[in-house]
Length: 227
Ligand SMILES: [Mg+2]
Image 1 (tube, rainbow, N blue to C red):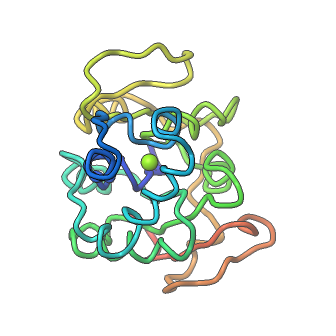
Image 2 (image 1 turned 30 degrees about the horizontal axis):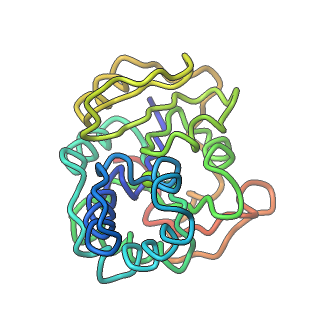
């Protein structure tokens, strides 16, 4: 693995646990945290309630109080020794800064080369532009819509204790330990390269750069180069 893209909410930060608590408090329903990603949760609580919940849990105060998904921070530190890491999030630019603050407070921001938003595009498109070898995400829609994109698709749902049947292109993982094992046994796909134009220069809150690669992305590059 040379380049690994990692989702933020529900994958690094345990936003799903915060959502489960919000749902119980505001809607009186008990929903398992692993079901609180958008794809699994909207059929349970409805799109309007999901949006209302999002306004609370993706805000700064709630974001900064959110704990890690168990094992995520240690896994990131280990992975950063042998791969270049990017956060790829569906958060829009207005909420990415809160996630960045969380990464700073958690002491892992230097493990990442940058953070990109998939808002207005798709994570598969972002991963293609990054030439990523793998995407780790708790919401299967970001993996299943990747179709024939050749990167490794890891579906991490912490706390889900039953296996799920995916097509053969998606690997289900129940913990960050499992993610590390799968990534350790995988090989960079042929044609993968490290050079990407948006990571050439460390920039803070840099505007979208393009048009060739990241026209639709909001990018804040933390630093360049691997660890
Ligand atoms: Mg997520």
